[in-house]
Structures are given as structure tokens and as C-alpha cells.
Length: 402
Image 1: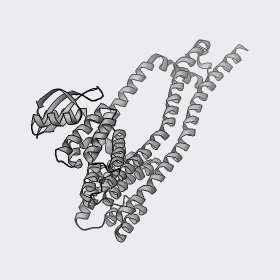
Image 2: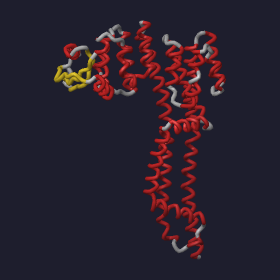
Image 3: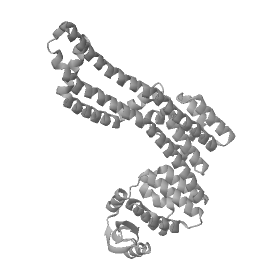
Image 4: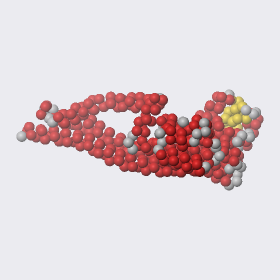
């Protein structure tokens, strides 16, 4: 099958461009006209180059994938065939990227491919989990129900992610304000009193001399501190991107007093929900494990979970493999064991995910409840030290004057 680049005008008058796969240019032209496009140009393109361009142009965000999944589920439950449902979604799509992606999916479906096959070239947008869920829905003949479950899964994942991010916004703002306030006090307020204390010499209290020295340094070398901070951020980001740096950071995160357990539960919840959702839709345990492990971001947790697939291939139960690693809580091991013994591993993994999702949100709130007053106390303490040092200096001047 060849690829063809096209430029066209849509039914709403908007100019669109992209690529389409077809056996011949005549079939590509016919397919594009059937989609309501008025062709301006249609040219053969290199398979590899065009596919690469298509991937770049058709990239969509997680919110777009969620909206597309929800709309497709509703349309299929309403009784529309898959090609008609995609055509309706193309007409409703507001973004050009999403419209182009749907056009490519529709072209592949009309060419005889299944929806999961049509999504394969866009694996980076949908992910292995999503595509395997679609494939299981096609195989079972319950694609609409699978899309509905996918919608629930994506909504839940977005909700947990959004709650964590929202909870972190206020402390981040508070920390930024604290740092800026301290630098402003040292760089602009403290130097105003320097002339008043210039003749005091060693008669000034040690605290006042230290604060004045810090203020002079910030006023003279503040730009250098900003540059060094930027360089430090750049170096840390590059270090974190390396394998060694990422492993060290992940180890450190898991060892944090309160947040460590939150990070662990967050990763296990993602893993458990993926396993439960995939197995509940007919995907085999081995394939579910392979996909679910890839959803885990923390390298240490991922390494511990990596023993499951080889263990299951050897005929060993998941619960025993988890217990042998000694990296998982008894609760995780026991829930998996109950699921294996009762033959309802998918339901038990979903239950585990629900429990841990709730504990993650509660843990984040609990940690931030402690973090916020700590930040306020640190900021207040630093500013208080600066103010007290200035007042001590003024009192020293008055004592000498008397």
C-alpha cells in the first residue's frame, strides 16, 4: 500500500493537508472525495517519509484521545457502524490534528483494516494498552462496551493525575514567593541600611554583619546566582534523563518519609488498574503483564515488577513472585493471592487500584497539609532574621549615640 500527500478544502471551507494510504492514486482520490474534501493536489509520497510526516502532524494529546474515545463509544452504542461513526467525529472535530488523525483512521477502516490495526501507526498517541483494549473489543464483538470501559479508565487516570498536580500548585507558588521575598529583602531592603551602619565596624552585632554581607553579595552577584541556578537546573535535568540519574532519583523518591509510600502506591495503582482492565476484556495474563509493566514510570518499582512475566511463564503464581521480591506490601501480595485463588484476578486488581488511588489522594493531601506550614514557617523565619538583624543594628547605633 502506497502513501499519497494531499491538499484539499473541507466542506466548511477550511484548508486541510495530510497523507492517505491507498493501493492506487485513483482510490486515494475517490476516498478523499467521499470524505467531502475538494482536492487541490494529490501526489505520491515516500512511504517512510510520509509516514513520519503523518506521525508528526497527527500527534494529539491525552485530552483529545479521551474525547475521541467517549464520542466513539456513544456513537457505536447508538448503533452506527464504525466508518459512519468516524465520519461523524470528523465533522465534529474542531482541531486540525485530531481531524487529520480521524481521517487516516477512517481511510484505513474503509480499506478493510480493523480499528486496532488502523491505530498501529499512531501507537505513540494511543499506547499499547489502548490498542490492545480495542483489539480485544473487536475480537469479542463488544467494541462499544470496551470503549466505554476505556473512557472510565482514562477519566480515572486523568482525575488522579489532575488532583495530584492541583495539590502541588499552591506549595510551588508559596515556595517561589518565599525565595523571591528573601532575595528582595537581601538585595534591595538590607543595602538601604548599610550607610547607617557604615561607621559601626565591629560594634555591630554579628547577626547584623552577616545579613549585611549576604545583602551585599546578593546585590552584587544576584545575576550570577540566577545564572548558576539556571545551569544547575539544566545539569540536573540532563542527569535525571540519564539512566543512572533516573534510577538514583527514583530510589530517593521511594525513601522519602511520607511521599515515598505515595509514589509507590501511585505506581502500583496504575499497574493494577491496567492489569484488571486488560484481563477483564479478554487479554491474556502474560500480554497484560507486559503492557502493564510499561505503564510504570518509577524504575525501581518497574524493576521489581519485571520479575512477574518470567515467573508466570515458568508456571509460578504472581503472588509468590511478588512476595519473593520483598518489595511489595503484604496487602498487595494478599489481594493478588485472593484473586488467583478465586479466579477473579481482574476484579481484585481493579479493587487494589481503587484502594490505592484513594490512599494516594489522601497521602498527597496529608503531605501538603504538613508542607504548607513548614514553608510558611521557613519563609517567616528567614524574613524575621533579616528584620531582627536590622533592628539590632539600629539599637546598636542608638546605644553608641547615647
